[in-house]
Length: 92
Image (cartoon, rainbow, N blue to C red; front, side):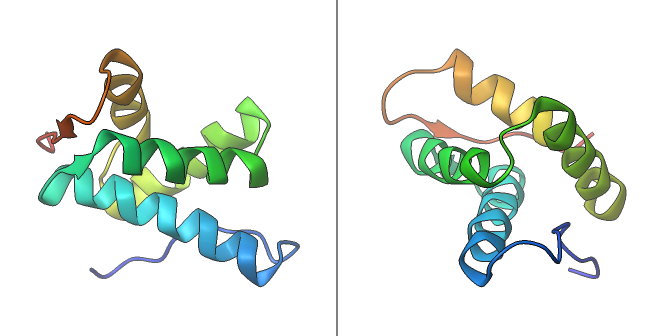
């Protein structure tokens, strides 16, 4: 991994940890798969820090530019599934 995670210097340490944990979950979804409930938990914490859709899109875009991983695809897949399924996507 030769990239950094997007965050704001205005956030607390705990908020930064929650956001980084969410982006690590996006990474895991592409690399080895992640349990849907785990992803959902991390996404909910992320949304507590970044409640605005426009801000979310900005951070998703920054992360995609850095890593190549598309967060929106992961969230779309998470919302389409139910229960404790494992979500795994292939990077295009």
